[in-house]
Image (cartoon, rainbow, N blue to C red):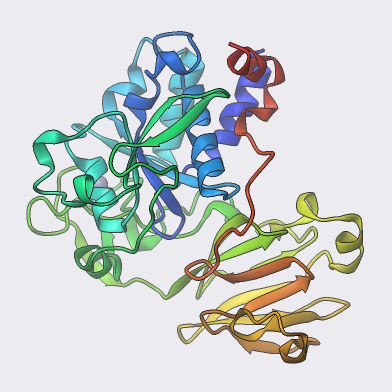
Length: 378
Ligand SMILES: [Zn+2]
């Protein structure tokens, strides 16, 4: 059992990010772990984050949808969690995968505001609705995770509907996100020196995407340490790309100037591995390393590195007459362009690529058959 729980927590860890380019919703972790009615279990359980993350993925129809978790410092020593869970939360905090705060206040709302993300919470935030107009005005921006037939389901607190609404960073957010910031605290996990806050992480997790500073004092401030941040220069150009297989977004990833990304059936460490989502025919056609994406002078460039060639569908056109094939050549990606590794296997800019089919079989809880059965058959 313990082994299975660890595997579930590892799966959940893959869905945590404070990178503005990858986060799809914001949660308050201390709140989510106490949704005891989701599984009828202990007063606090880290596994409930898995249920909420599953609901987000299903309702966005997007595999691997990641959450930005804000964590009150007290959770790191909360006696209602198991010692293993406390250790895991501390590791997430040290790695900068979650944002730890001495007081949470309205930070969840601020992050959602700056990044244009939905908030997953049962709170109604009545007292601050005038400051965050979208709380009452935009459907899908405030969704409550409640017990559903299988695990959790997200219910819109305003306007109905089941689809979390994701926009773009607001003007203040866009401005602070254009710069890199450094916290005077030497061990700050979120605003470490030189933009290398993630230097200790495995390459596939090292996105370099700094979280948004808090702006409550009127100037960029470290939300954890409460100290003014130093502007250390322009944030290097980066672009979020998405992989869509058979109509479903399977993975988002970031390409930046110093970190090109290879996509293929089974590329080397740090690449995006598609094997698990491919049909037998697609697996035969697509090379282990198939297409390489890099950032050059602010543009995303795709380079074919495959045996069979890489297709380009300009502007996403499905007209076969317009399809081009790269044979070890490069192409600067325009906003709507689709890079086609095989029919139905596409990569494009995350901004313009959406799921076109429901997400049927996915669960971060899948690694714990007995555990998820207990939850699902409750
Ligand atoms: Zn700090």
